[in-house]
Image (cartoon, rainbow, N blue to C red):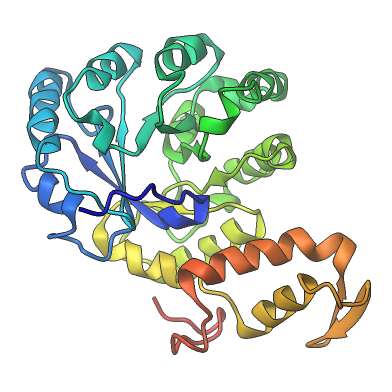
Length: 311
């Protein structure tokens, strides 16, 4: 059996699908026998599981783990309900078949309760920013300093933005036909990007909770990308393909990104009627190359331009 280590990139997760940990077909989903196109999945022991189902969900997860096969292009995470549940998960036989954990309601108050347990393990970690502290710029700066510690930073695959929890704190719900950027979270997302991204953290985009409005979903993903967010939680398998189609790149962008990474390229040049400057556009170019690696370019995939794509 091929057990070569997986290559982790924030872009490799694509549209992550949450599913309750007591889902009966969990093992089939984990192994790709069901939903074979899924790149990543998150087995939830938190909001998707009621309090009285937690114990049975953990038992179910433990049984399913025994049948998990090595899946080099398929990533499997568990959202721990709290630090105590994380301890129980880490004690499960064959838990090493999981790629990592999502840490909900993450802030400084639970920092050590989580990371003291995860220290020295191979697991990748995705803390979720979804508490009242997220609205406090100073609290987020302090949290950033903690996450930058040696032995912690290396484990973090990305930070997840818990859009619905943050809206709940404000006592509102995203209206239909509106992107999250048209709510108070638009400002907050920009603030989180400027707080964490310059220091090497990737952030994922909040969930889009309506299934009947693909055009607004498309508009929101364009804004996700404009804010530098990577990946988006899916609430249903039908969202996965439309989300990931938006991650494919324009051929012109790919050609510019290639040029920016060539040693013979001049410091400033014109290409596709745009100014390209190696010193200021190289990180953007690397992002385009990473997206192309996983999602290709739109022309090769037979997709229309962003403004015309029907999802």
